[in-house]
Structure formats: structure tokens, C-alpha cells
Amino acid sequence: MQIEARLTLLAALAIALVSVSVSAHAESDFASGNGASLTATARLDFIVTIPRVLYLRVGTGTSFTSVGTVDLINITVPAAAVGNGVAVAATGGDLGAGAVTVRVMGNGGNITLNSNTAGPLHNGVAAQQIGWNRINVASAPLASTSSGFNNSAITHPAFNATGGAGTAVLLTASNKMVQQEGQWTYSYANTEAVAAGTYGGVGVNNGRVTYTASMP
Amino acid sequence: MKRLLLVSALAALVSPMAALAESAMVAPAAAAATAAAKLDFRIVVPRVLFLQVGTGTKFVANTGVDLIDFTVPAANVGDGTVVAATAASGDLTNGAVTVRVMGNGASTISLNSATTGAMNNGSGATVGWNRIAVVAAPLTAGTTTGFNNTGIAHPTFAASNTGNGTATTLNATNGVVREEGKWTFSYLNTDILAAGTYGGVNTNAGRVTYTASMP
Image 1 (cartoon, rainbow over the protein chains, first blue to last red):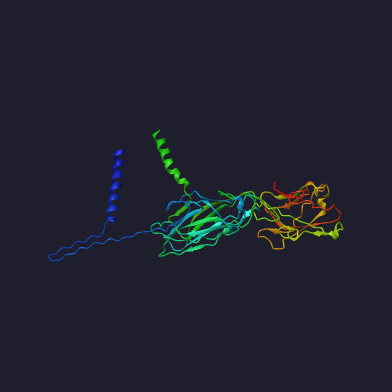
Image 2: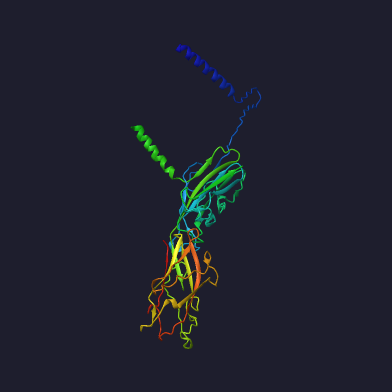
């Protein structure tokens, strides 16, 4: 019984091999004759299929890899400077001092980049708020350029002060490709005195911004 | 055991990835694809309390004390004619001072006055603090950005002339008190008093201490 089963299996494999070899035949050409010059040609066709891909990085990330941890931009207002209109620099971000790497790559045409927040930052008391229009963002090129990327100041998609989608930025493709990188540095405008407390945070009190790259 | 060690080693290698911030790779990316990355923001604002009465700089401690100076005309001693302060009195002149309060740590701030006794002339004669009138009004030079420029009620001086007066309560809006205005002092001149100089620059009970309290 086992021998029969093995024979059946071998037969099936033989048929499969034959069918593969037939379908795998490439072009061949045979020339013969007594002439001085003979030529034989054989051709190959090539197809390279490139999938559509889209990559967005804001903060410390790995190129062309998804990672799920979120950077924190941390701002502490000095007691002597509450609401005095002097901007307060941040700490945090992968580049330090409130700066983050921004990198966008897509191969399907123009890409829009936008910011989105759930509402004004608050300190746990809903009425005690800091609008997102109090977060300044400076755009600049990275200190060094990644191979193949256009390293420039990517315009930050302006926050919606009261929450929701911001003002989208269009990244124009060249030959369907977008390969842009740069950095954003955040600071707090500190233009008004607000109630003491900790506004925003790690996924709380509306402290989270979601950036979205969209490729039609 | 070896497998456990291997798993531990792999976990150690993978764990640094968890420190990476967010990036997103979408491949293959269908039509209308999106990739999202997030950032968290945190702003820490400390509790602060600021009080200015007279000369001062916004949100900066200044130790200069203004003098409110009255000189009663000889022809009007005790005749009930209110006497204005001298032109040089107060940062706003003529007996007027700036009053500014800012605090961000409670729903109310209490503002009070305190005196150490009736003003005296060093020879036993006194003038009660109830003879000092105060008019509250908005600042005339304009409103400081972010402040509510109103007539802040003056905390009435202690009836006994000693200790705290009657506190004024300033209510916070969204956890912040930002009030400013001015007080203009005058002398009621209702009594005939012994000649002399009553009060002075931290002498003869001439100093008032204003205190803002934020629970």
C-alpha cells in the first residue's frame, strides 16, 4: 500500500516537472549553412513590477519600516516667564530640543500631508485650554541629506487651533516620485497667562497630533 | 533552556525598536493610500502669582515702594475739603497707583490691605486709616494685553487701624485671574489735628502692605 502511494506521488511529480519545463521554454534559434555569416537570435522579455508604496516618518523612525511608538515634545514654561510672550523652546524629539525628522516617500504621484488634533490642549479641566495656534513650528532642512531624498524645509501643515484637520500641504511629485525630508522644530508661543497645570501629554488631554500622508 | 536563552536574546535585540518614534510604511499602497505618524505634546505651566501696587514691572519682583504724600493747606485744616495727593505721589502721579494682579493657580485670589496702626506724628497724635479715601477705576493709559482692566475694589483698611482690612475677592476665568486698574488716594481732612507729619516712608505707621493670596 505504501509502495503504491509512493508510485502515485512520483508520477504526480513527474507530470508536474514536465509541465513546468514546457512552460519554461525560452526562445531559441538554430542557424546553419555554408555562408560566411550565420546569426542566431534569442530574445527575452522583462517585466519589473513596482508596487505603490507610501512612507511617512515624523520623529525617530526607521526608513521604510513601520514603528508604533510616538515621540513626546515637552515644554516647561519658566515660572518667571508665564505668558510674557517669549517663546519657550521644547525638549524631546529625535533630533533633540523639540526637533523631529520628517521624511515622506511615495511613488504614486502628489502627496498631501496634514495634521490633525482632537481639540485644544487642556490640563484636565476642559475649559482651561491652550490652542494649537500657540504651538510654533519652524521648518528647515536636515543637517545631512539621505541618499535619493530632497532635503528641504517641508512646510508644516498648520494646526487647527481648536482641533480637527489642519491645513494640508501638497508635496508635488517628480516623475510620480516624492522623496522629501526635513525637520520641524516646535516651541510654545507663551503669549498669554494660563492656569497652572500640565497641558496635553502622552495620548491624553488632547496632546496627540496625528500626521497623515495621503497619496491618491 | 537554550531556547529560553535564545528567546531572551532575541527579545533584547528587538526591545530597542520600542524606543523608536512613529513611522509608517504602506506597501503595497492601494489607491487613496494614507500613512500616519503621531507626536505627543506636553506643556507644563507652573503656578504663579503677581501683585503690583504702584511702580512695578509686569511679572517681575520690584522692591521700590511708592509714597502717597498729602499736604493740607493751612487754610483748610480739618474743614472737610478733600485733599488730593501731591503730583509726585504714586506711579501714576497725583496719588494714583497702578494695581495689577495675575495668578493662575486657583479659582479665586484674595486681595487685602494691612496696616500696623493709625498713622501718627511721632508725638502721640494720630490719623485713622478711615480718613484715607480710595477711588478705584480702570487704567486710563490703556489695557495691558491679556488683562481685564477694571476698577479693582480696594480692600478697605482695618477699622481698628491695625491688621488686615476687608479682603477683596478676584474671581478667576478658566483658572486665571488677570485684573488691573488704578487706585487714587485722597485725604478726607475731616478733623483738626495737631500739626506734624503723620506716617512717612515706613515710619509712624505710614506703610500699607497689600497681599494677594492664592489658595
